[in-house]
Length: 250
Ligand code: PGA
Image 1 (cartoon, rainbow, N blue to C red):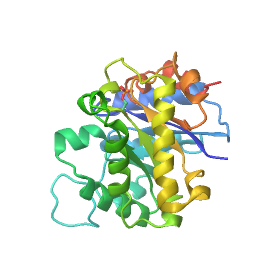
Image 2 (spheres, helix red, strand yellow):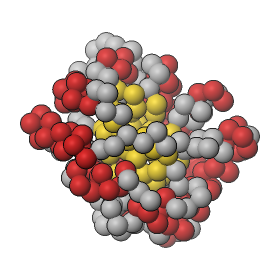
Image 3 (cartoon, rainbow, N blue to C red):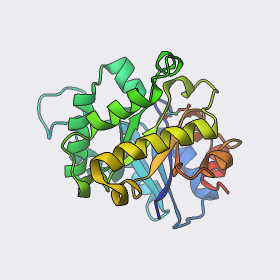
Image 4 (cartoon, rainbow, N blue to C red):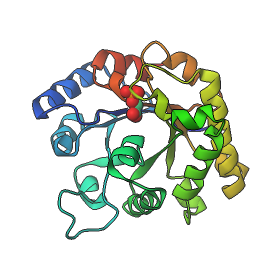
């Protein structure tokens, strides 16, 4: 049985006061269900405050990014150990916005995944094609290439500690979702790559989340698909009502 995970990526939204209010509203409506994990990924500066708010609730904390080095002269960056110190259990790595806007390459993302694993953080490793690549019929090839490059040198026990998020870039923040069938096909393709690297048993154990305009209306249909094990939610994670409904998928 693969873990079911719903993670909210707040991106660069929510001041401290807003974040505390949203966490409070989530807590008020959240009932822990051991069959599905809930993770919120707020901006790094509010992690410590949310740690005490969410303690004991079952809602876990994740970061949106981190630096691959242990410490040192990297002005403006945060390390894996710092994230662990603020109560993080998860970290989103390789998000398409990091790739497109901040120049993150597959090689950098690979180093970050390794650093996160060393610190015992669960990497939520994001992959996905842009629209032109999909139109050119290259969605699978591009995504498979990102999976292989990101997981270079990562062994069997470590991949079992990773979560993969398939996020077609054309579906992020656009209101356009991959159809459940399209998403499921891509998840199956990612699982085939995992199978080639790690074998079937391991490939069948890794959770693959879908991300890209997931909301309270489409979650049930997406998660009903055999290869979709959860969701990485952007916009719809900024309102307690919609995020709680997504966590409570049927
Ligand atoms: P979205 O973002 O749900 O707003 O499309 C998803 C993401 O970028 O992780």
